Length: 201
Image 1 (tube, rainbow, N blue to C red):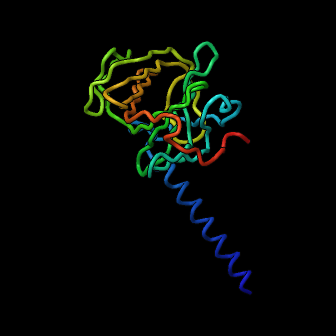
Image 2 (image 1 turned 30 degrees about the vertical axis):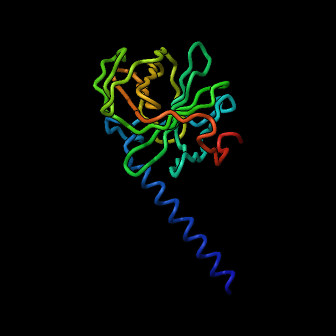
Image 3 (image 1 turned 90 degrees about the vertical axis):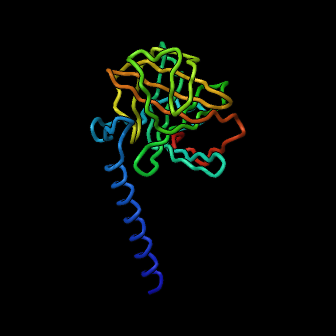
């Protein structure tokens, strides 16, 4: 009898967690402009080259006391080669971002959505999140959305990396007349922990 009650309780908890996750995904905005993830469904992970990156879709990443579950991603490629992946993690009503780069780079960018007054072409310098940032890289890239929670983007866009004082960092993604921006800090290899391997199966 106790085993039956235990199984029923476990099933109820699982159903509640699934419902809450589904509701959170439906209600969460998919980017800085308030676009919802349902506006443009993302592709499944497919053959995204997670093995080239220090992180994968489905991972849980820990940096200090902060934890993020990587539920979606925008993969950027230049001439067919992956240059970066912007992973999205649900955090209340917004999606934090973790940006990863292919080997041999092992650092990550730990970012939050930010407002950026930027034209379609990300400028050489940009004020974002109250700090002046200098553009370090500008890459015309093919874009692919994977998983859940990635903001709507076209098949191509401009991927721009910015550096500020100390470890300050930002990413601006311009595609089809929309600007998506995230700002935060750079974390070197050893400063974060990968707790899962969801994209490796």
